[in-house]
Image 1 (tube, rainbow, N blue to C red):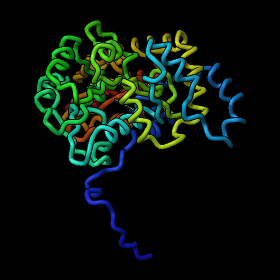
Image 2: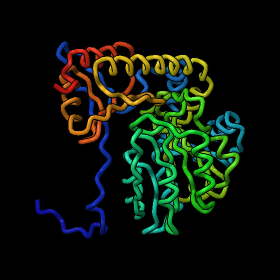
Image 3: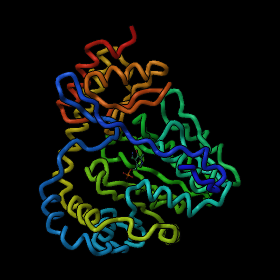
Length: 362
Ligand code: PMP
């Protein structure tokens, strides 16, 4: 078949499709561990599975509600905001895209730290905007003064990923305060808190608190990580009504399925049960960090459900050594390897691989 000579959009050739974390390879003893996508390792809650089974027959042939009144009301109550402040999407990544579409014209700029969440530059380019990547500092943290200095007349949106993916680092409340004072109010500051439930740093800012105090702050949350609903695709923004209305205009209709809405409501009702799992993951994070450090690696202290190993040119070798032990981690060529905190036996497998000394430079 001769390929058709379509007129693809100019610039499309510079956009790389999003690459998901790899599935787990088969380990030496037949076991394999997928620690490449920061998913929640626990099985779904029984109450969620039961509720979804009940909702299933009515969920398939009919379109879901775009207004999603139950989950919207539950979130508004949870964060003491108005339902008008909540905008749902098929994962927070979809809402991040909507924010860029709604707040930038072609050629406008989107500022974010780098390295940070892989999707930011892709979503920016897809919208026709220009990514402005501000390097992390020597401690793999956001360089907020440099990010504020990167703002120009053309800046529409800034993403502050807190905790940052893939480094697990956080900004402090005081740093964010100075940053907000330096950024013009017309620029939207999106605090992406995908991993906020795992953050135990007492100096960390609360995105909601900043949202209440600054009219140009939007908070992004997801049900994919702490709530364990990555497969159902539901996340949301908390935003001022003017921004929320703009997001609804650029949203694809019916993006959030009824099952996703149902699971989100049931998960919010089961927060106490979920919190126990989150606490366990935070304990396991410390064990993973200590073990990797003891093995001679250089993990970065993390406030998320993953640990970052900056390894430069050694990254491929480390990722391949993990794969030989049946572990799929996320490799960033020439920069580092990110390992998601899993169940205790999964973290044991990572530590066994580290103890086998293959991960450490010869
Ligand atoms: N923000 C950050 C920082 C992330 O790491 C991710 C997922 N990897 C997302 C947003 C998007 O998650 P989801 O679309 O599943 O809500």
